[in-house]
Length: 468
Image: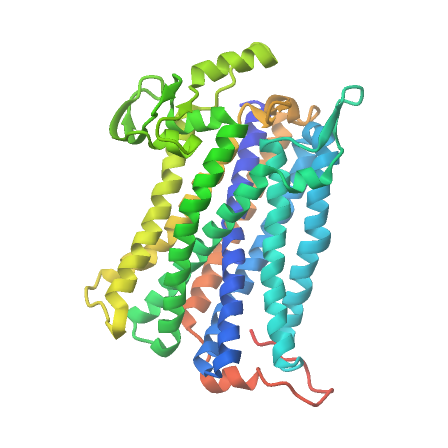
C-alpha cells in the first residue's frame, strides 16, 4: 500500500468509529430532555428516574464522542495537509462556528445540567438540557455544511496563483442544497438510532421483569422515536436523492451500478455478477423506482456511469471518474436494509407489548436487544456510500483525493499512526461498551435516591450534588 491508501484507510476507520457515538448523542439528548420535561409537567417520579437513568448513559456516550472526535481535527494536518491548504479557507469557517458556538454551548450547559440538580430552579435546570439538545443539532449542521462543500462546492473562488479555494460567500456555504438535504436525514437517523437503543435497553429490563414502571413509558417513547425517525428517513432520503442526482449524478448511477443512461430506470433489491459491477444480473427489481428517487418521475432519465465518465473526461481530462461500484452498490442497500430492520423491530415490539402485554417466547427479547446494532450498521453504510461515492474527488470537480494527501509523509509514519489510533480506539471501544452495559444493566435509581439529588437547596455552603 502507498501513503494514499493508508491515509484513506485511517481516515475511514476513525471517522466511522467516531460516528458510532454522534447519532446517539444527538438522539439521546432530545429523549433525556423530553423525559425531564414529562417529569416537570406531571410530577411523576418514574419520569425522573428515567431521566437520571438515560442521562447517565447519555453522558458516557457524549464523553466518548468528544474523545474520538478530536482525532478528526488532527488528521487534516497529519495526513491531509495538501487538502487542508487547498480548502482550509472555506472548510475552516463552519468548523470554527461548530467549535465556538455549538460545542461551547453543549459543553457549558451539560456541565451546568450535571451539577445543577440541587442548585438551579427546576425550569432553569430543564432549560439547560434543552440547550444541550439544541447545541447537538447546531453542531451537526455546521459539520454537515463543511462536508457539503466537499460534495457540492459553493461560495468560493479559485485562486490559481495560490492554488487554493478562497471563501467568498459564507451564507452560500451554510445554505448549500446538499447541507439542507443532508441535515434532516442525519437527524432522523440519529432519532432512529437513539430510539432503537432505548427499546433494546428497556427490553433487557422487560426480560428480567425489573422496574417496568420506568421502562414501559421509556420503551413507548423509544418506539415512537424509532418510527418517527424511520418515516423521516424515507421522506428526507427522497429529497436527498434528488439533490444528489443534481449535484453528483455519478454517485446516483453508482448506487445502482447503472452503466447506461436509462429512462424508467429500475431499482434492484439484489444483484449477482462480477465484482466490477459491469455484468450484474438483477434478481429482484422495482421498475422505475431509481428514476423516481433521482428525478421525481418514474419515467425520468438517469444518466449512466459510462456516459458520465465520458463527460467528465471531456471536462477534467483523461482518467477514471467512477467510484468503486460494488462498494457503493452494496453500502447503499445496507443503509436502507438495516434501517428498515430497526423500524420493523420497533413495530413488532410495540405490537407484542401493547396494553400491558408481555411476550413469552424466550428468544423475543434477546433478538430485540441485538437489533440495536442495525441503526449503527445503517449509519456506517450511509457514510461509506456518501464519501466513497464521491471518489476520485475529495472536493467534487475541484480537487482529487490523490492530490490531497500530505506530500512529505511516508508510509512508515502513516502506518504507525494508523496502528496506534486503531489500538487506542479498540481500548476505548472496550471501555465504552463495558461502561454502557454496566450502567444499562444496573437500571434506574430508586425513587428516594432520585428525589434526594433533584431538589434545590437554600444552603449556599452545601456541596454540589453529582447525580451520576
